[in-house]
Image (cartoon, rainbow, N blue to C red; front, side, top):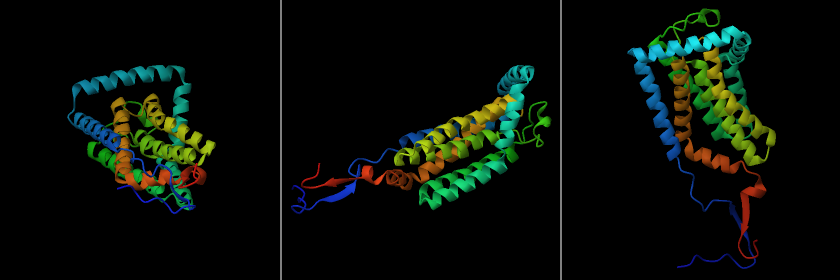
Length: 254
């Protein structure tokens, strides 16, 4: 039976794309499963310990430190990056962005960022206490907590804070047509993983610490994205300009 037509001469509006299917969350589920598996395998290997992992960590660390220490400036640069992205500064920046999102009535995005940060801190710091891995030789010059190497907290925060904030700004900036916001989002999404690489160059983490940090950070972000999938989807859609968000339907509509 065909649907009743609108009243003649009367047009109404509906959200653009409302009749289309919602984007699938299967990619998020697959990514979450991968990050959880990688984080668990690396944790078990470090607790083991696995001799092959230890040999690989030492070989890569010697290679990286030999290159960076020989030049000098990479160590100075990564030390500066480590100071700028310290947990205290990152927490303050996250709190400010969360408040700005709330003021902009982007409650789902604010909840996504805050929950990703809280979950990321909990699982990363909890694992550090559980594992108690020693940092590489020479790390004492830049890191006082020498028995909290695994996983890398900076690497993890690069995902659950910086990449998450970048994704939010990219989506909101694109939806609202704000170029600088979208550009800043892209920059943060590149900077996030780079923070982990800087910790390896500085020599305060083993390579497996950095990879584990990425895995733990991804776990926090993807778990929160999956839990908030519906409100986030509607929030992204609601962030588009009104002219693009709604379209006339009915007689006389074009």
